[in-house]
Amino acid sequence: MSRVQLALNVSNLDEAIDFYSKLFGCEPAKVRDGYANFAVAEPPLKLVLIEKPDEAGTLNHLGVEVESTDLVQSAINRLQGQGMDTLVEENTTCCFAVQDKVWIDGPDSEKWEIYTVLSDAPVWRVEAVAEGECCA
Image 1 (cartoon, rainbow, N blue to C red):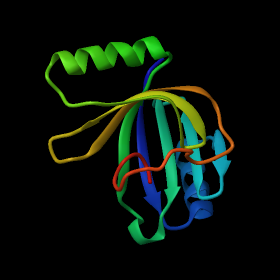
Image 2 (cartoon, helix red, strand yellow):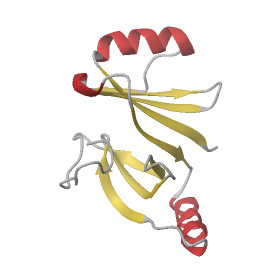
Image 3 (tube, rainbow, N blue to C red):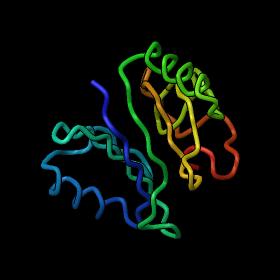
């Protein structure tokens, strides 16, 4: 199953968790310092909350979570075949998970990722992140 991901910047993680738990009728799948995510069954949604008080209420990034690295690679091939600029990250640690992913920018510079989670990770991100990249 694929599902759309919506990553939001929030001012208070605990308040946001309480609100979205009530809104979607489910508890977070993962909670870490300054971070939480929900795997909402209906509608199929991966909701990511990133505590950033100075940017609260804004979109952090968008994405599509897919089931496998093969599906990420298919997306890479399709996007590059259509002449789109891509940033490919393999076996990267981001958002407390090891992932394979591809990033593209939308027409208004909104960040989109197509990714699969390979495993859980105890840290936010291992690699240094350029300004504006991922969910830094």
